[in-house]
Image 1 (tube, rainbow, N blue to C red):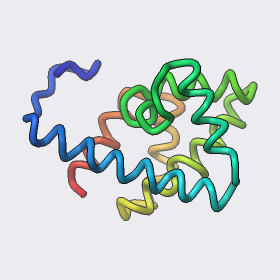
Image 2: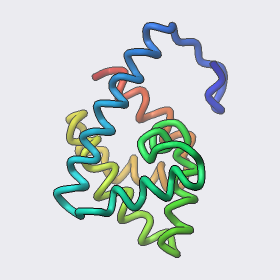
Image 3: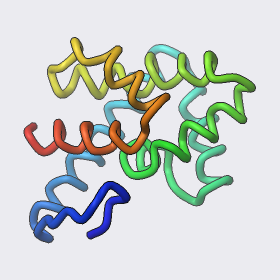
Length: 128
């Protein structure tokens, strides 16, 4: 499978396990967002699906560069988009993975180097 970073081979079993973890984390993100900012996740989700035909969680893990672009356009600037990324999307993922200390580093990667973010977040999920 080509990931955009280079060739990375993973078995279909590994891929299914990763997809299940992503589904679980997507639910955790939604629950967190519903508690912290009711309605915000649904609004972002509608925007993601309208623009890309993919869910916000799919974009977060598979095409973070596209999600970043969607959020910046939606909210008008990188600061506001970054707030959504850091406190609504990334925080519950890091908490679930038990790596809250990586928050600033992964946030910076998401905003500045989304391909490296994608590689790192998948690696963390696979360790889980």
